Length: 466
Image (cartoon, rainbow, N blue to C red; front, side, top):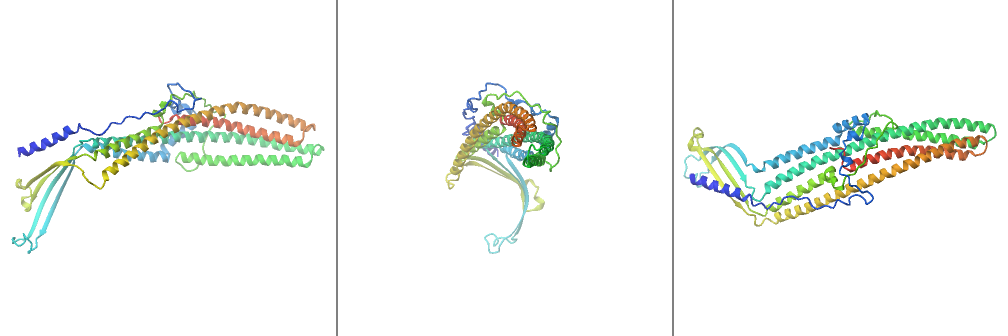
């Protein structure tokens, strides 16, 4: 008996020593060129990034902050991401348990009726037998080649990947809520402008009718002025319809059915944060989608380790023992004890190319994951460049648009006076007024587009989830 335990101990000791002979490689981040991720005209040597600013410091409107907090709790995409994390966490826990042996227990009763013409039935008078058995089974595999370790790391990387995906959902959600909120404010401002213009259009009709009665213009001028009023009414109707659509979109982001969204005014907003890009390499730790792509690469890297380890021998120890008796009264007697231990190495030789196929698939998936990681980084750089270019363009357009609005408003005043004295025709007046209204509507939209560019830049740099 002592020799048997010595043999078992020798096998376990051998397995422990062989565990140091890992063929599994350790993951190392591949060399990625990050210095030219932004366009050449976007030069940044900042050590800090705009993304490191907390979202409540970027979006300071109290109502908007409340909507963002509500969305982070109730949004359905966020809830789905949380459940993905729960599932990944369960897999990760299983991966950590890979080093432990498996243990099972069972109790059974076997009744057997032997044939009289069988080898044993012909010798026994009582051909009916019963056997009672209480067993425990233990199985353990030595992690000689690091397969269990790689499986644990792969499960952990998958868990961290789902966590990063949730952070990406959170970042996108904050950007969508903020952009929708500011768009609602901008449309409110456009409606207010259009309604003031409608009042002026009604006054213009009264003035043009008086001029017609005085013989200065014809009925065509009156009808053209009325048509301009109707066009303004259509603009208001379209803008009010946009409000309903935007409120419905915001409600979905907040995880609720369509409802009216309380909000402040466009004029009260002040969003001019200090914009610093940080060096491009910061995207590797700030962008959740880039982080998720790297964890996906790590997971596939470890899966390749697992597939490679299948080419090598497997060392398993299995043991079973318990109580076995044909007499129920003697079931728990010391004479009913039995034990069985099996240990050995299993080397795959030929299995219809399954191991090699799995290894080749794992290598291909690892290469694909690397390409996706590289692609995510390039996409992040592009989005930063795009958002910054859009912000600079809208900022420039605002200064020009303000001058355009000022010039057209002066032209409108002059044209009304000239029309009164017969020095201008009604078509010139209508054209100037239409241009002035469109310019003022565009000015509001330019301001919204500037805000939207700031929001997109914040998201592109990876802000919002920290």
